Amino acid sequence: MAQAIAEAKRCLNCKVPQCRKGCPVGNDIPAWIHELSMGNIGNAMSIINTRSNLPAVCGRVCAHERQCEGNCVLGKKGSHINIGRLEQFVADFDTKMRLTRCAIVQKNRGRVAVIGSGPAGLTVAGELARTGFDVEIFEMEPQPGGVLMFGIPEYRLPKDIVSSEIDKICQLGVRINTGVTIGSDINIDQLFERGFDAIFMGTGTGKPKKLSIPGIENDKVRQAIYFLRRVGLYNAGLICRDEVPVSEGDTVFVIGCGNTAIDAARSAMRLGVGKVTIIYHRDIERMSALKAEYNEAVDEGVEFMWNSSVKAIAANGSALELTVDEAGTERTLYGQKVILAIGSRPASRIVSTTHGIEVDENGYVITRDIPYGMTTRKGVFAGGDVAGNQATVVHAMSNAKEVAAGIATYVDAIKLMQAIDKR
Image (cartoon, rainbow, N blue to C red; front, top):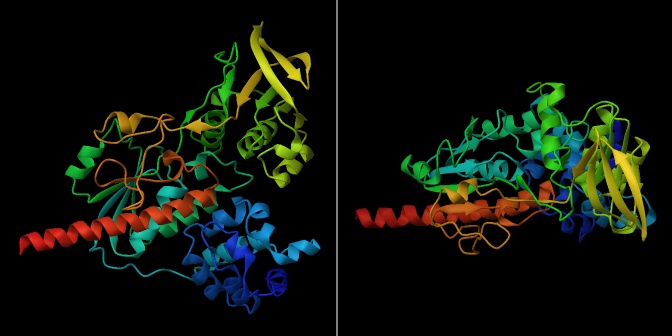
């Protein structure tokens, strides 16, 4: 507490806060830090809650060095305010002490179904539930949370924190159905038949992109999103260790150098593999991963090959043989597993079972600006990764807040028209 308040007192409370401009959800950072500096944690939490539905998550996994902290004026002197740590402290304190609880408003504005319980889905659910909508979430996994639960490693985002944030969403009156796959168990048309006024697709991008490399289809080559999901399921006690696609002592290569690649590499190290090497076709200055994540990976023993590209993968007995071009020089590397971390694209499960939802050439759902986020199918909205807004957790939340406003506008309009027709 003393450390947090002392850090908060360092804030200059700028008249034109650059930190807020750097926050994708427009968090009023100086205002809640000022409240924290006076020990008013409940007030600080209330201010945060006006812009963020998942503050304990954002405090841990946001790209602070590129967003709020990266824009803090004190950073020019090398001592920016530790905004992420302060947000984490406030959110955790609020959860432990149960300081703030939103009153459940009457759910009389309409019914909305949310597909997916990742950051976009949870944000839409929270935004709409706070303003009088009856919201129901449908999640295919056995536990809610999406990428927060099964895609981000435990060491970066403890799962009890995710569960606490989801509990707060549920306390707003949101209901969550797990183990339900939209597109196979039930489709969009059947959801409308159940009386929902609007449907939000926040299903993310579960289908990996591919590289045109000979041998890439080898069963020892796995996608990072699949690998991290298996690690998450294993850590949750839902699968056995031998169902995670790396073994103790393996030599593992990770292709790509974004935060997902770093997550995969560090997760593999923590599972007891022998060696992990990240292969990246650019240099360190152009990697998309955060520098802090890179530094921590190096500390844990992850090695890096810069300006290097994999040209071919071949089976060599029980191992894999990689032909790698390293800065113009060809090398042969040997290992047991390769993990691809080169991005992903949406699966077509929902679109293929629904009439009227159009996608672009890359499979991303096409949405409109008025009402914001609505697809080419009336009443069906989409946001986050599935609509091509691929970025960080907080960017997905920012986009979802706009879509939630679009849903509210749409449902209010159709309710008004129905009332007029009755007259």
